Length: 425
Image (cartoon, rainbow, N blue to C red; front, side, top):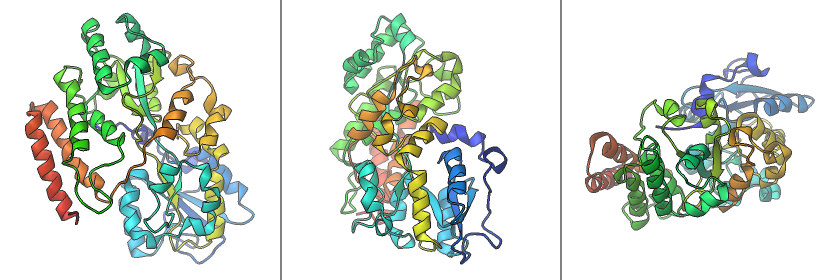
């Protein structure tokens, strides 16, 4: 199950009536593709940016351009890809989801190089590992970082207290510093509270463990490495809570109900705090956050880009630079839990205060250091497709009782086939 801040925000669709923004559909005299450089269009999806900041950008730049904003529902990547291929009604500014950036980089010629417009002069304000993920091998900067997803361990302090376990974030981090220590803590928790589980499913553990490394499924020479030790180690780590009986095996829509009742901890990115709060409001004040076992990873985070058809690149770059300035990044976190890629935002009052849902804890003190320590890794265009069989086979272990070794062999075999079809050697 994809636990995403965007899944929750989708229900509250971003509309013109709610945000005061004009929604365009790509047609008409002021649509994308028009030659009028005084009219610019911005495409993104609900929850990708702060509605308030975008609304202010419209008025802030109104003397120079008319910014028309379109909230694109459904499969954003597919709609953007189709529009770019057609070459008509192309937005002047567009969002690109972080998980899709790798697939757009081979077609970087469809976008402007942001370095030519001034990004190289301000790039030091943004986390280098995040910036690099939207840069081609020859140095073309396709994406301007919107946000990131530094991970941590969310845990129920009240349940830990009942089980006689430490509740202070620093002490919990010390006792769950490695994956094995985390599983040992979970074993003790379940022994004292039999109905409480440590993880929602083992696929989530695998995703985190892979993200903690510097290599994934395909290397820079376009070779499949998904059968190597680093992936096998992540697989073994993921299977452990299943064999120990710490896995809730939630791979459907029952997570909302479980998070307030049977889950003692959650592994997730900073935006996952909003998921927990919305799913289990009655647990307010009972949750805490500490460093994730084995070190931080990144989940999610997106970019803004300028297609080559952009009618006024200089003004468009001014707009996205303003929207994604450290000051406005901090507001985005306050508005919609959009975690900034600009570290300067972490000291802003909008981010540095205590969070009532987490008992007044200043959770930025966990997520800030995690954001800066995320390892830089190469993500190939076919990475997501090649990873998919591993996730499917982990679910088969939980749902069908498939033997982990058999599931591993099948995952590798299927991943190799997909890799070959994707042109990976």
